[in-house]
Amino acid sequence: MNQTPPFTESTSPNRLWQLRTRRLEAQKRPLLMGIVNVTPDSFSDGGKFLDRSAAVEHARRLVEEGADIIDVGGESTRPYAQPVEESEELARVLPVIEELVRTVSVPISVDTRKPMVARAALEVGVEILNDVEGLRRPEMREIAAEFLPGVCVMHMRETPETMQDDPTYEDVVAEVCSYLARRRDELVAMGISADRVCLDPGIGFGKKTEHNVALLRGVDQLLALGAPVLIGHSRKGFLGKLMGNMEADRTAATVGVAVAMAMAGVTVLRVHDVLAVRHAVECALAVAPGSAFDR
Image (cartoon, rainbow, N blue to C red):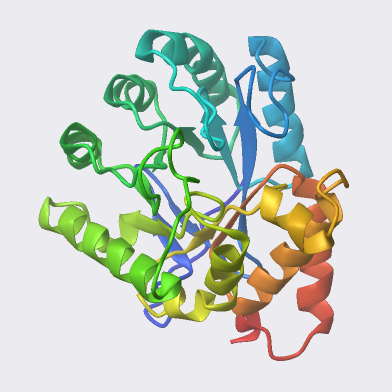
């Protein structure tokens, strides 16, 4: 079972994430958030884990591989995905979440932008609310203030149905940092302590390839906000473009970016391939002097 490491006043606020009933610390490597999509249409693994037992088994396997968090979602938010009714999303995720809360040692996160789903998941013991809309809905902010989970606030323009319709920025890093800082401050004003808020630049959400690359290269500016930072780049389309082959397997590309982000000191990596990422990150950090986790 994961043990919460002893707190020291010198620990960087980027490394600490206070959840609903426990605190996580990224000590020797970033925390790994394993993805469980209980959907028929997610971009990478849609349909594989729609069955409750398959989803639970997959989550348990990710924990065995080293996942520090399991993130359960019931609605695809890939570009141009159509929204799912609240009742359908709830029917997909709640049985999975209920079983995982009872049977695995790591905290469970719910990946949703719907208030009814968020509330139901928190009522059965979820520790993290992961909202791709950045809690822009007032009811989502109210639910977060009521239950006080760990909150993952993501940057996304528009909605998944429209976000890739020619997104433009003057300075994507500055704009995303400004948005996330404002949203964090709004949540703190509602009584959600700053150490509960994790910031996600929304790689692949309303960004072209050059925007994604700029955000990853500028991750130090995100970290300078003094909060945990989550990067969710796993298997996304921009990796295929960087490789020059949209049909290629993106596992190696995912691992490569994960290593770079670990070296930079990000707090959480949200990934499908937990074991491959863990091995690569741990080995890279062990042999590369001067990484953020040496400090």
